[in-house]
Length: 182
Image (cartoon, rainbow, N blue to C red):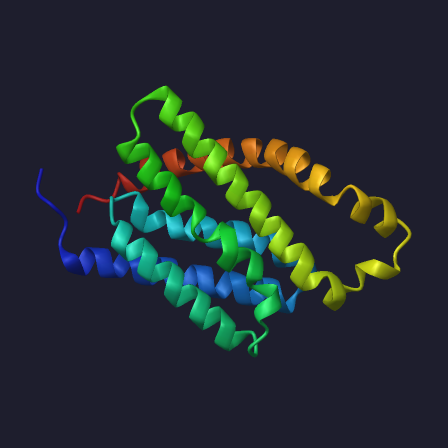
């Protein structure tokens, strides 16, 4: 099978960058669309990965983060979860799917990604705590007392479902892009 041209990689990466930057920008401007913007940006970054263009996906990630940062009026806090975890996760999954063949290595990769996810949750909690005003709520004393248990056990459980769904979504994106004949 003939390898797709570099221009095809550039086009897929440009489309992924445009969709990811637009969805992140819309999510930062409209509060209830933030989670949807993250999910759409993650799906957009799967576009170059479906044709094995990991370098194009990395550049699309960096460009979408920079463009969304500029379009959001330098409001970095809205993009912090995407920059810290959600944007790079599909690329790490691509490398895991491509290079890891043994089951015990998949378990080790999952543990590493779960620790990365929990670390990103803690980073977001500690950086956005004062900004979002969590300390004035009634549930804050209980949550801050058991923060690490909640994040590591609850976060690992939520991440297991998220990771499985992202693998399925990448397979769906592969099937959609396979129809493009380049």
